[in-house]
Every structure is written in structure tokens, then in C-alpha cells.
Image 1 (cartoon, one colour):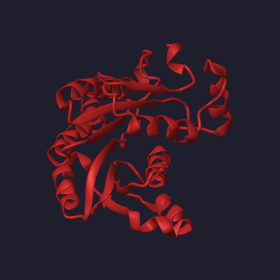
Image 2 (cartoon, one colour; image 1 turned 180 degrees about the horizontal axis):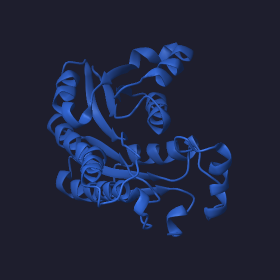
Image 3 (spheres, one colour; image 1 turned 60 degrees about the vertical axis):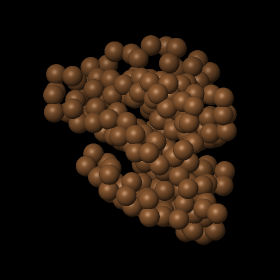
Image 4 (spheres, helix red, strand yellow; image 1 turned 135 degrees about the vertical axis):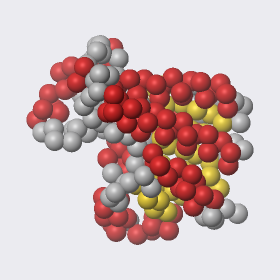
Length: 235
């Protein structure tokens, strides 16, 4: 019998690696996509050698190699039951910057849509979890294109949940402040707790509980689950 497997994009670092670890703990094999670096996940596997046989590294540039990635997955001795669209680009850019806008929409919204379509062709039953962002409703010209792309991914979540039912469930997790942004100091990150209604930043444990709930709750679809201590309430 083939092992049940989850494809996680951006699986080798940050929140993606946290979701990889949780998926392994839940008994899944993980198809661990990465674009350029798998070093962090490799280091973790060196410390947890019993998990290595359940991880299949899948390198791909998703904007151009989605089809090739799925063709490689078809050859693996696993049963694909889950898709986690985690990979994204967090970058500055307003909607006036056409090239940057198009690139962020492609990477953060349309690639997850393409993967969802390909997943549906292969999974007679299963689930998709999109990773959005809890802090995208406020107007912010500096990260305008990123926020619009993530809002579009949230809309895709609801539309796909309707379209793919009853065979597939489609939900999203909207994490809040769980890790410092690239280049952000720990001190600046910690100060975010003063802006969060529950008075603290998040942890991987918060993310893991939400993820496990959506994976196991077979009567839940079309939901965007905010895991942010209420940060989205302060737009």
C-alpha cells in the first residue's frame, strides 16, 4: 500500500519547514518542494534521521515548471492526498509597478491555482490548504501588490472549495506574526506584540494546531482560518 503524501511548496525553510515537520509527525510522507535551497530542512533531517525516508525533495521554479514537477511526482511510490500552497514571495511593490505586480500575482496566487488544478487531476479525495496572510486588509502602498495577491489567494480558496466539492476540501490558514521578516531584528519583531489583541506573537505550535484541525476536519471547507492573535481586527 502506498504511503499517503502531502506536497508542500516552499517546504525547506521558515513556515514551510514547520509544516513539513508537522506533516511528518502526523504520519504523512512529504514531497518537499524548494526553489533554490534545501539546507535548513537537510540540517533538520540530519538530526532526525528516522524521518529522512519519508521526505522526497522536489526542486522546481514553480512559475515555469509546475507541469514538470507534477510529472515527477507521478513516478513516486506514494498516494497524493494533500497540497499545501505555502511558497510565496514577500516583496515591496505597488500596483503602479506593472512588472512587479504581475510577478507577485503569478507567484502568490496563480501558481497555487495551477497546482490545485493539477492536484485535482490526481487526487480522487483529499484536501488543499493555502497559506495566506492575516495582515493584508490594511492599505499599504509599500506592499500593495503582495497584499492583493494574497487576498486573491483567499478568494481562490473559497471558489475552489465550491468547485471541487465533494471530492476535495479547500481551506486556508492566515498566519500572523510568527517569525521575523527577512532582515527584521528580533527586537522589532517582539514589539509587534503591542499591536496584537492577545498580546503576543505566534509560535509554530499555534500554526500546527490550526493545520492539524483543517487536515482532520472532514466537514470543513471554504474557510480562511486566522491564526494571528486577533491582529487582523486592527486594520
